[in-house]
Length: 140
Image (tube, rainbow, N blue to C red; front, side):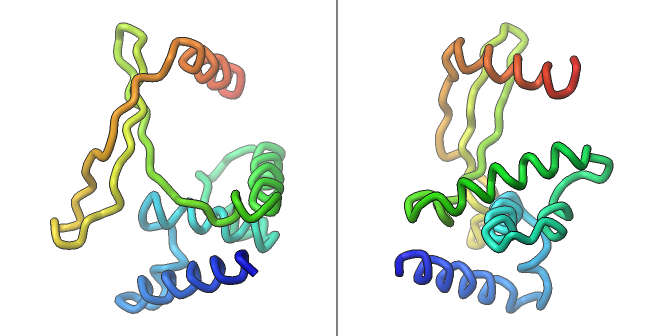
C-alpha cells in the first residue's frame, strides 16, 4: 500500500512540475529529475528509457549492470523504493581531501538558485574506495 501511495505522489509531482512545459517532467532537466526518472524507469523495468539518461557511448554491459543494480534496489522493500532524492557533489582538493557537498533543489523564489545545504569531509577509507573504483572502472 505504501508503494502505491508513494508512486501516486511521485507521479502527481511529475504532473505538476510538467504543467509549465508538457514534456519537461519526462526529460532529464535537473539532477533531482534525472535521478527520479532513473528510479522510475528501473522500477518499471524500462531499460530503454533508463539508457536515455546516460551519456552516449557508455558500455552496454555496464549500463545493464547499473540498471539491474538500481532495479533490484528499487524493488527490495518499501524503505528503498522512491526514497528521498538528494543531489550531492564531490569536491576533491589537491591535498587529497574530498568533501561531499549536499545541494538544495532549485529554489523558485531565489531565481532557481541551487544552494549548499551541508558539507561533509569524507574519511580516508571512503576516499580510497572511491579512487580505487574510479581507477578500476575508467582504467586511470
